[in-house]
Amino acid sequence: MVYAGKTKSGVAHIGVSGRLKDRNLVMWDEETNSLWSQLSGEGIYGKRKGESLKLSPSVFVGFATWKKMAPKGQVLALTDVRAKIWHYTRQDLARGALRRGHALALGLRSQGETLAIPLAFLQKKRIVTSEIGGKRILALWLKDEMAPLVYGIPKGAHFHLDKGRLVQAKGGAFDPLTGKPFGKTASRPASPLRRFPYLPVLLKAWKTWYPQGRVLGTE
Amino acid sequence: MLLLATALMAAFPLPPLQDSRPSSIPQSKPSAPSRKSGKALRAQWGEGAPGRQVVPVKFKPIRKVPYWTNAEASKHLSPDDLVIGIIRGEEAIAYPIKMLGGPQREIINQKIHGEPYVVNW
Image 1 (cartoon, rainbow over the protein chains, first blue to last red):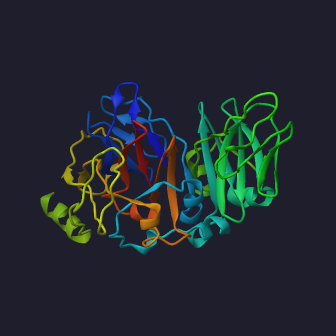
Image 2: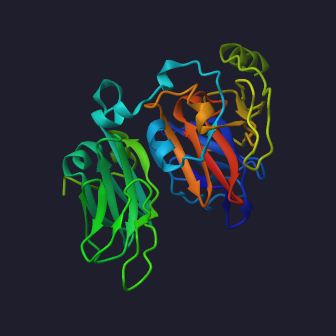
């Protein structure tokens, strides 16, 4: 997951604390030695207790898909990869589950609300719209890319997938990979869709963390 | 404590960074495969600190890491390898999940498009 690296009190450089809480990583910041929950992004101990790191939009896709999304992009260059346990592939996403059959979901948070979208559900529907924290979202499963993506969309907007294009009911179409519009509408210049932050999560764990949270497909 | 820390580092023997880059996105690329791990520091929190210390040290935030172009990374990654990708304006960086394994490097701090981000797995 990706957090903005600053809070209301300033920049936070974050490291691994060596601690676990509820089987989840606890982080620390170099500026104040405060502790942070990796899962929630909340300061849980020290001077910054009560502050929050804000989730930032990112994508969770295979490398081949990444190159299509960002042809001039760069890639972290660390090669001493040792543990096979970390070798996740987009086929894991396509299966909708990780090892031992643990179901995967997209976890969303906004304004104190949570929403889980099980990958199996998303793959079946291909395109799902919902609301969280007063914001409307659209989740996509791109079968050929084996990739889930989430965008924020205007209220009242309706979309469908057609021949690899994300088509808006009232006109206009977008590239589902990048959110960029194909052409412009006559009435106004089309702007790209905004990515909405999501986390790839184990559904079982997410339900434990957020027992009151909504889970699409079970409502 | 020191003994445990030594044992830990022996169990996860990551060599120091060989080719570090500035914290902004580098324009040049490492010519050879690079390694990176957070420096282990003494972990000190009060008794009221939440959770439990499962590793006897904390790891210094990682701020400087090397990057490849997509083309260079293609020599090291499978098309199917999962990445966390950040795209801001014309700048875009991908973090392969398999490179974020282990307690020394689960978190990377990086400025993109002038804004600080914390990538973690």
